[in-house]
Length: 488
Image (cartoon, rainbow, N blue to C red):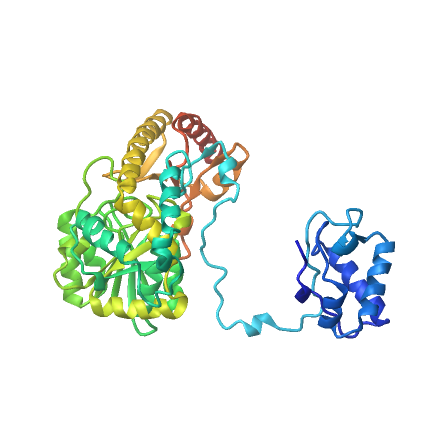
């Protein structure tokens, strides 16, 4: 493998002859790890032309480096980085110590400092990972996903692989969502009312950008998905958190001047509460009274292994005021980053235009691969397999929790992949989670899900999508012991 000639340039303001400067430039590349053992350097002719110097100057620099064992010569093949060169174990770019930009002044809007997703990068190495929303490799259909990906790479699908859709989406994927996925939720939609997104979070961002500004007010659940709260804060709208109860968001608590309502009625995030049908109708009526739009995040409806889920809020919508958000991230794998939103055509038109400005469209090859995986029946088979295993894990985790006297604050009536837990008052679940890491146990503190400055610290979430069934009981035992220590 050759080193591109474009990576060579002479630093300005460096003293010494041209030969010495070239020699120093190459030596620094080797010492910093940018140039690896065995890589071929440009020919003396090419490098001389690139640097604007004579060929003899480059040849003399190469000869000196050859003598110092930085380079080796292979006859007519050219010069290569020597195996004896002092190569560092990894490439570490040099630190800049001359930056003069005042970034505290140059940055116009800060996106750091809020509540963000905190998952240990090495969570797979934990023996008891009660982590939420991550894929279990033992449950994923690798073989058929690979076949669908290869098929999407074929000549027949060349346009889907390579074309710029501009603001459009894969018609096969749109058709499957319209004819197969949405009817399961009681929703009927035309292709013009469906938009593919980079996951549900991208859909929520698009909805917020289209519907909100500084003069508008949004109502959110409390607790809620904290990334939603952060992106709404960035929209600079007026934000009203509303405390949920055992049935989810209470419609009567929504202020009269609310413009947009964000809700998770089928599986409240994170409490897992399911909103009853009567309350869903009341929520729609309240939105109609105040002329508000509703954004429904239906993020986990496929994982309903305890019974058929209630129809989506969107299915009762006769006014076109509900924007429905779905995702394949929980049922396939989060790295897929593929979701969708459904809404009235005027809204989808604006969201499509915004998406086109920011990222054009999700990758065509990913869309086509997912379309094949869905339409060939592999997706439904995977959901059935996941539901069977999740049911076993749910039963095991509830038995273990009951055995050790832990408190469940919320459990999905139809299934899901997590339990919302409550520790005794005074227990800091952030500190609890940190102490459990030494026992190879991962839990998720619940504080960040709440709004305001006075947030409860004694809630935590237990995900069971990625932990083997036989490790659940020992993991719960360790959590119970740790809670006893922190409660003392």
